[in-house]
Length: 237
Image (cartoon, rainbow, N blue to C red):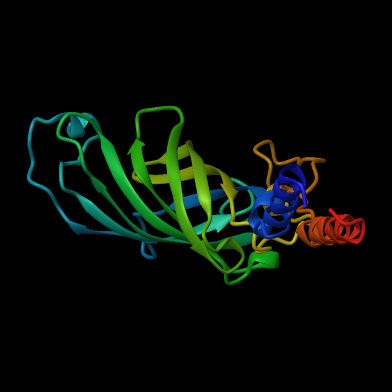
């Protein structure tokens, strides 16, 4: 066998052994819903467990907010900004005032889905929440179930305030590993903008945010490579 032919054969064999990960597009998805943080009333979903010392720091730009304040949450997630709209899940975790100079929270929550196609799955979110900013960006650092090994970001926007209570709009953009944890052929869910979860309450005509993954592509490539190799060997290369 000529050196050039041998090199070509080695390249084809290496291609045949390439992991499927290199041949599969990673599926993306977009989720849109609202979080309701309720500290007031007889049935709050957010409870302050640590009260920081009063000071003249920038955190006091919001009355009663002090550096070190820590609040544990089990906030409702719903499809629209109305607290009585269809339930999506819960935001469970905590946030604390983490800046001496401004009202910035360190947020650490799990978005736990309790309905629909994503029931039982979770998304882990952590990041800095400058409550005075119009829009904040937090990180998706993991997940479970349909969102196992998820990475991405959350656009976090205050929709409304009523005393200490807040309604927050969440736009979640994430990517999962290409092991098929997202089913791109599943029916469109309101969570990804295909229903009444849009900011204007009217919904969106967009299709599911889960990108189609070319199933079986690596197997097809491997079969073609093996066929070429066999043909070359049959010709005496």
